[in-house]
Image (tube, rainbow, N blue to C red; front, top):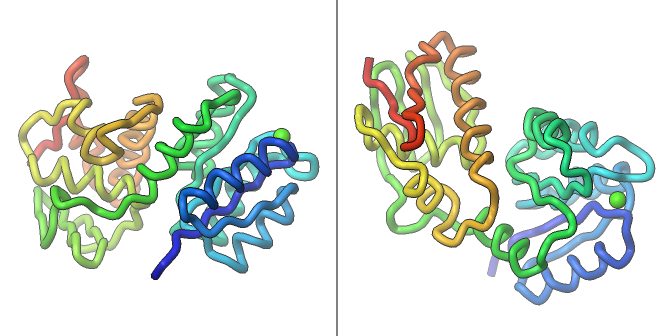
Length: 228
Ligand code: CA
């Protein structure tokens, strides 16, 4: 039985305790840290599958914690909890390596659904085997991806997103379909998450020497991977 591990980094006692209880009820193995430094230590020891990270922590800046978490636990999914609805925090946090964010106050049921969506294993519709498009090559079995033969590190959702676009290379894939297949059919979050993931993919493709225009935005519809 492999329990998924969730680390909660939250200094507010009531919120932290409530989250820990709710996650335990869902069957996850839960650790709760009340400071950024404790959270980093727990993440290093336990390699959690997912971290719920409050951005307003007493000791360290939450964005800095996020950056360090990404370094010590590269495979973990980081969901930021932010009381500040400021656009800038969200953008800076996603840039620092967070996968998603939830704005406080949140509804517990929605947050739990979001956690489940992030922790769900690849469904039956997920691509398998090898996909190629232009100079891109992706192997779903080993979760590896290459640009012109050079391997590129992708985070789990970036990988799933690119796999879907590669499977439909040359065709527009609608936003709703992407949200349903890459995130979850009952996604409660903002679809800004999708745009941030597309931006991250463009940066990684560009850094690997690929054409950043390969990922086309079809305004109001979705995205298309050009076969070039
Ligand atoms: Ca706080």
